[in-house]
Amino acid sequence: MNVAVIGSGGREHAIAYKLKESKQLDELFIIPGNPGTGLLGKNIDLDSSNHKVIIEFCKKYEIDLVVIGPEIPLVDGLADSLREKGVTVFGPNKNAAMIEGDKSFSKDLMKKYNIPTADYKVFTKNNFEMAINYLDEITYPTVIKASGLAAGKGVAICESKKVAEVYIHQCFNESLFGNSGETLVIEEFLEGEETSIFAITDGDEFILLPASQDHKRRFDGDKGPNTGGMGAYAPAPLVTDEILNGISEKVIVPTLEAMKREGRKYNGCLYAGLMIKDGEPSVVEFNCRFGDPETQVVLPILDGDFLELINSSAKGSINKNAISASNKSAVGVVAASEGYPGSYKKGMSIIGIEKAENENVIVFHAGTKIENNILKTNGGRVLTVASISDNGISNAKKSAYEAISKIDFDGIVYRNDISDKATI
Ligand code: AMP
Ligand code: GLY
Image (cartoon, rainbow, N blue to C red; front, side, top):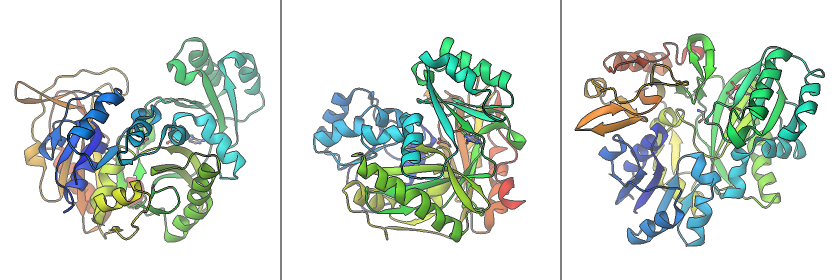
């Protein structure tokens, strides 16, 4: 099979890495890819917002499967455009990707179909006064979310009414997140432990991949601002078999059913961000794609043929036996640029990746580029250093940190406590 992966992050590097293991793979293309994916397949510098050129590429290179990594092309309808031309795609159509693209839609869906989630109210920009008045009716902390896409940064946990007022003002009147923040969801603060669950689905049937846990806050001890994710580990021991069954029954099955009933049949990876309290799941968010950096720790611990799994799923008849969970554990630490998630410098030379990598350590590229034959930083999240172990999370953590200590660039920063929650 000839396969094209759309995207350029650590997630897409991990997808490419896993696809590469499949005996069914002939040629692998990554559009546009990054220096890491360039070692696994051919990077093709095309703009995925231009559907016409992507379709032409797929026809010319006889692409059998397109895997769309990021949310933006999905929400933008790239899957629809490709399917209309007969290309097989892993990733939901635009009307199903709305489950991530519009939080007010996904909250209303959950309410309508009794899928557990925090209580909430939705306000639009023209209801500024109503939103402010609503702040008198609720308890604190409260959670305010930009309804549209905001790269994981549109959520504020507000400790007081004052802080909430400022955030609403910034979103509605100062365009903090542009159009994405013109509708806000104000929701109840949930206590508990978070986990990320990936359901691979053809729209009817699904399988769940091993549970993982992301670390969204910038600093150790879950302090500081929200980021796209500073590290992850899998499997998450928090999610016992019993809890996983509950997640299937109470969240995934009813959500896929709901999407079908609404005429939005979902094909791809449905990511459920969940809060678990007293063994019961509550949905914090849905995403229409694999998580980043969770993918970098979930895919390496799967046995079997990942290409078979997603291709069968994309074709509408998922082969649930294509993969299985191994006994391995993985910990991935994100090396970021100082200043992220705020402003940061780019163009710093990166050294030490060859020393860091070994048969159990993979360095996934995210914000990197090659300039005059030198690998340089090109983003906030630069690398994910993932370590895989047969001997549990603690061992994986130890070798992930040994590996990252061998890597350097000007302004390298990372959290030191990735996976501690699994072992305490
Ligand atoms: P989201 O982008 O919706 O996943 O939110 C980002 C992060 O904010 C989540 O991973 C949680 O840590 C936190 N968060 C979001 N919603 C809630 C909530 N209702 N209660 C507590 N924490 C939340
Ligand atoms: N790691 C969180 C996300 O992918 O949305």
